[in-house]
Length: 131
Image 1 (tube, rainbow, N blue to C red):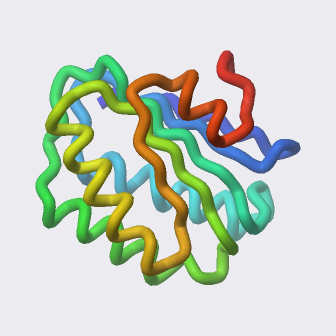
Image 2: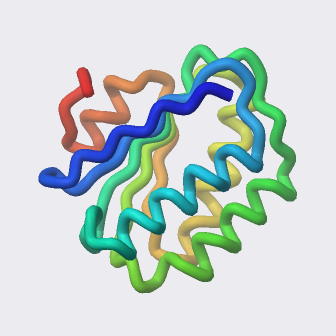
């Protein structure tokens, strides 16, 4: 997978742009990177996350992988405040996994929305679409 991570410390958000083949382990590594940014003070409570997965070649994740990601959020999420995550995805399989993540995230106070485009996701997060 190709993952480009961009931290906007001053505006308290992060963008992860995924391409090629997306695997669960790589996405989990990205999640732990975000948690580390919060723990070291680069992201403050109530930060926002954009996951851009439009145009990926394949998503190699199962429902169990999404449950594992949700468990990580449950373990580390409470001390991070009320988080907002937007997922931009344009494949049927990717959308199904993103919607499952949305449902499971509600229990840990992480607001997740799924979008067809990065532009609409940026609008919902109130961040600049060209970052």
